[in-house]
Amino acid sequence: MTLEEYEEQQRRLSEDIEDARQALNLARSRYERLCEKSRNLRIEWQEQQKAAKATPPTPAHTASGLATKTPAYPCRIKPQRGRRTHAATYETGSLSLTTACGQTKDEEAVDHLDEDTPITCPPCQRAVREW
Image (spheres, helix red, strand yellow):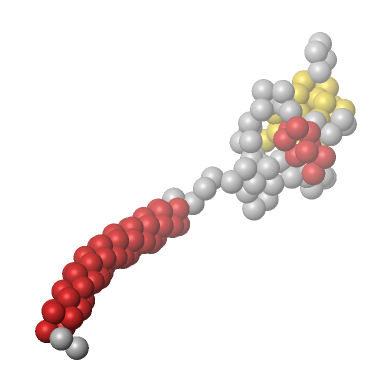
């Protein structure tokens, strides 16, 4: 190898080294940006989950039944000696109540409950949800 060949090879290697160094710096910079985005995403997700646990959603179902108000069935009744709470409305021109599940009850034969009392009759729950 002559001195000229040595210097030529050394120059090419120096150029290749400089190109590789620049590529490494770009790759390192890109790597750091991606890591930062990933970290920010993880932090954002954790904060969102923390906030979701802090404010529990208000479910349409309570432990004892469907708790909702509807203009079609504003009354909540429980037949005397009955176990289930029905959604009901008065029939026009009479003192009878029609439940969402299709039963007709005399006003005097039922206990009247608050309008926000949960509905525990499954057919009434379905009818109110579909309404």
